[in-house]
Amino acid sequence: METHTQFPQDSDERGGDAREPVPVDHGCVQLLDPDGVRQEDALYDLFVADLGHAELLALYEDMVVTRRIDTEATALQRQGEIGLWPPSLGQEAAQVGSARVLRRGDFVFTSYREQAVAYCRGVELDQLMAMWRGTALSGWDPFAVGMATPAVIIGAQTLHATGYAMGCQRDESDAVAVAYFGDGATSQGDVNEALVLAASFQAPVVFFCQNNQYAISEPVGLQAQRPIADRAPGFGVPSMRVDGNDVLAVTAAMRIAVDRARSGGGPTFIEAVTYRMGPHTTSDDPTRYRDESEVASWRAKDPIARLERLLESEGALDETARAHVASVADAAAARVRAGCLALPAPDPLSLFDEVYATAHPGLERQREEYRSYLAMFDGGAR
Image (cartoon, rainbow, N blue to C red; front, side, top):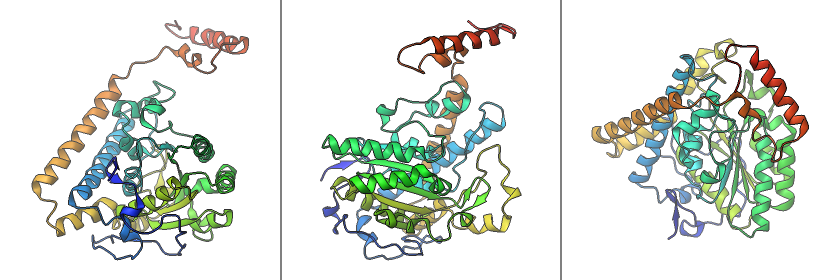
C-alpha cells in the first residue's frame, strides 16, 4: 500500500466511498471525547481504523511540539524579539490532524495562524519566524514544502487554493489543494466566490474552516445563525462538521475530503469546531470580550489532554515516551529561539527588490524617496 507522510491515502483500503456526500449535522462528529474515551461512528471509524499506538503517539508528539513552539514564539514577542505573533493554543488537533493526511505533492494555502500546519509541512523553524521578526517578506520557499506563505488578507487564500486546484485538474494531476481559514473569513466575499468556482468546476480543493469561536473580538454567533458547515451545500459543496479538538475526528474528515478530491469527486468543506485559547494576536486582550468561565469550559476540552488520556488508558504513553516527547518539544523551542535571534537584518532598500520581475521608473522613484527618508536618520541607508 502506498503511503505518504504518516497515513495511507487510498479510501478503498479502509472501506467506503469518499465521493458519497457526508450529511451535515448540527452536532459535531466526535471520535474521542474530552475524557479520552473513544466514541463509535460507523462511517468515520473506517477512516482511522489503521491508526495504531505508533501513529497516535506521532500525532501526540506533533501537537505537543507545536504548542511548545507557539509558547516560545509568544515569549519572543513579549521580549521584543518579534513584532507580533498569532497564538494557535488550543487548535493543535485541527491543524495537525488535517495536515498529516496530506501528501508532499499537495499544496496548502493558509492564513496567519497555521504554524502547526507549517511544522507538519516541513517548514524550518527559523523560517517560521522570519516574517514575524521582519527580516523577510515571506519565510520560506513555497514550492519546497508545498505551502504558500501566510495570507494576511482575510479569505484571499481560498481563491488561491481554488485556482491552484483547477490548475491541477488541467495538468491531470491527482494533487489536492487545501485552504485553511477561520470562522470570520466565511463572511468575506472571496470565500463565497471560491466556493462557487470550486463547485462549478469540481475542483480538487478542501476548504478547512477552523471555527475558533471568535473573529478577533466578535463571537461567531454574530455572523453565523446556523452552523457554518450548513452554508457549503448551498453552493453545491458537501460538508462535514467535526469536533476540532478531536484529532481522530479531524483526521477522518480530512481523509474523506482528500480522497474525494483526489478521485475526481470535487471540493469538500470541513468545519472544525475548536477554540482559540489565547488572544487573536499578541496585541489583543481577550479578557475585554469573553468571560473566564467560557475559557475554562473549553480548557476542559483540550485537544492534547484528551489524546494523552487515551494513550495512557491503553498503556501506550509511559514516562519514557512522555520524556522523549518533552525533549523533542524543548529542542524545537530552542531552535526557534536560536534561529529567530540569528536571522540577519536585511538592507532596508531590499524591500523593493522582488516587487516586480522587471524594474520600472515608478518603483525606482519610490526606492529613491525611501532612500532619502532613511538618510534623515543616523547611519542612513546603503
